[in-house]
Image (cartoon, rainbow, N blue to C red; front, side, top):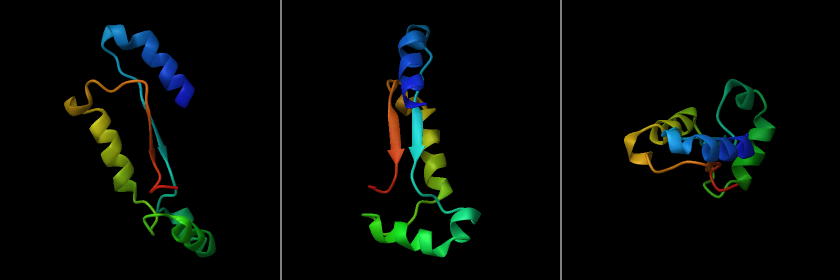
Length: 83
């Protein structure tokens, strides 16, 4: 997906279309809650000392589609808490 987003950005940027990707790390979900040993391992490895929240991914996507990111294309944003 990252390569696709970058390639697409080269193809469509001249038409005013931006293409980016977001790569989430470990995120708090029902699945992560159902495997506490895996979740705890991720938390211990994370430089921020916690697992990500769905709202943090949504905020990144919201920024990418906002006017503030109008000069951003062809990138991948890794929302991983530093992992």
